[in-house]
Image 1 (spheres, rainbow, N blue to C red):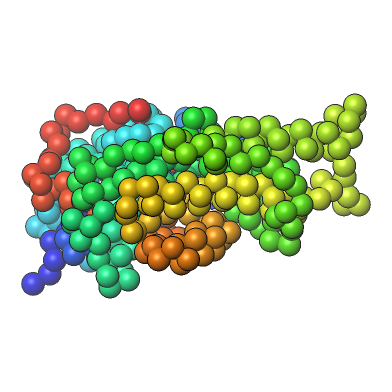
Image 2 (spheres, protein in one colour):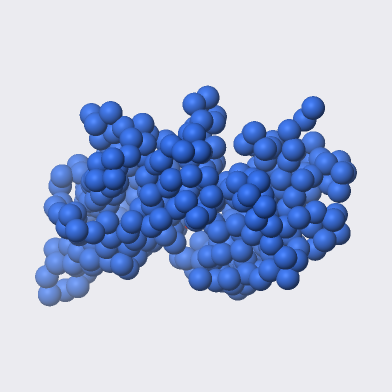
Length: 353
Ligand code: KG4
Ligand code: ZN
């Protein structure tokens, strides 16, 4: 007997994604089409461009996810249709929500509305299943969500959305946003995270002492990254005080890019790791999950692993394809909601905030 299966759809930002996930959390297909190339010329995500691209590509992405998931007759073989309804770009969300409603209604299936952030938080559970050591329903963990749009710490006490409490969040820029903005200042290509990581590989992370905002503020689990971006700006322009120009190397590149990138990265990572580990210690929780696009960062993975190792904490970091935006985490989270009877009406709407 095959496991029951849910189709998940994700279009909240700049990835068009669909996936088929079993009740046992097995990922039977996960198709992600990135729009990075379409937004790169603008140096950031353009909402209108994102919505149009989802509109154009969602059908083929869905067809591929169903085919790879071995679904030939969706009405007979699927249990439900799940979709990200918030948060995200309203036009982008709308494309996925409309498709999900139409499919669920046509196939006569329940619809499940998923919060994108709960999907990221849930991806840690899927990672644990893949490791062969599932996190029990009563087993708590702290989740550090670090992406282009969000940076926050959560206490997770169970598999439902109602079991999740936010401990703190960024007061300004998200960590990924800080990477993207710092990369732009360094004239590195968009998206900034992977660019900074590559540029910083040969750099000295101690070369520049960038600020670590709120790191010693034991009263809060909030973050702040906008000052860091400003520091990078002043560091670059301050070198040629008075001229406002950046020092250039022989090939026209910004002098010291590797050191600046590595130092910037280290400043972000130090704050993230420090706060996440302190959250576990303060709440007496033995498992830490790091999820979202920035969890792809090698320096973050390395440092958080070391920090958890010395403190005896279990660390859950999903594989890269489950860290960056995808629909598998949405379908996975949908199973928790579905089992609790939490289906949505066919009139459900996309909610940007
Ligand atoms: O979770 P995600 O795919 O989309 C959002 O929900 O935002 O995260 C995208 C973010 C971008 O800001 C990107 O620069 C960042 O994740 N990112 C990285 C790396 N790979 C992606 N940041 C740092 N290091 C990386 N290797
Ligand atoms: Zn995301």
